[in-house]
Length: 171
Image 1: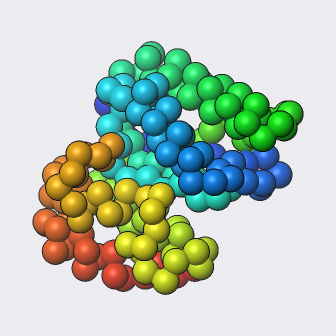
Image 2: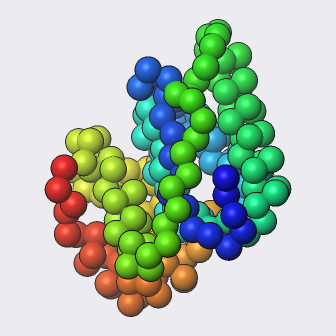
Image 3: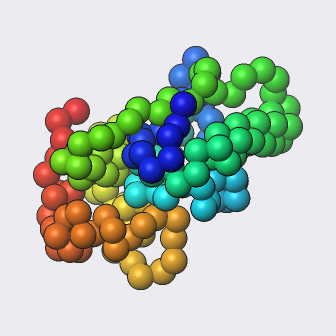
């Protein structure tokens, strides 16, 4: 159960490790639903949407509405995918996972881990090439889901952010 003011690694995967995102529109729709149901009840620091799972690093700002919002997110997304692809049954493998991140030193490691997921899975040759993660949001000044300045401050600025991401976490 999420608590207000706490930081969490939020993740889940497809039932039987199957895909939860089948085409580009699905990734966009999921992020739109995420924003609709969970902002401003949570701040987002990093995310990646992989074909069969996702990761978010968040801070819960209001636990009650967050819990309701996350439930509605999964119901809404699952119903839409099942309807669109004429499928039945569970899309996700059980309830989402929320692992508390209480150590400030863990913040930067988790951001890097999340951004390196697609690279580690050999989906891209460079971290910045993956379209469905927040990494490129940090290289841009365009509005996005993420708390850009707060995260860049954790890394000592944009240069530190980019340099730390070049250190590859072992697969």
